[in-house]
Length: 174
Image (spheres, rainbow, N blue to C red):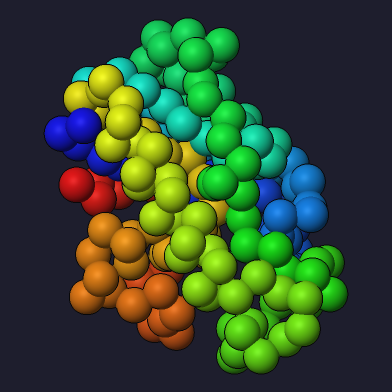
């Protein structure tokens, strides 16, 4: 693996309505989210991707399929991996989003340590692949944990908007 890219799925219905959508939520892409994925697919043509791995949640998998179609990558070759699912938000699922909550203080919500452990396992898995350029299609919280594993100087829990992953934009991590 020489190049590693990450994309947070396109805008989903639950993102649009401003509610928590974690591991237990299937939230379809909006029309805007599909357009974001199409634009990402056009941009991905320049990256020489030879492997796509995605969360099995439909908002991420649909984003991966749209990108794969744009670059001529066989849809059936997309690896679906449950390590990449969004953070388990327990009782927050479907509740109004609140950026000021400390999720580690809420019972039955996956902790930062737990999601970071999944991110470490994901990186270890990716390092075993015979691929030069990999795209990881996942979710915001997982993406922040994954980026923190690769770049420990960037914290996982951040309040600044600039550290969050926008929907539907490919970002190079390695």
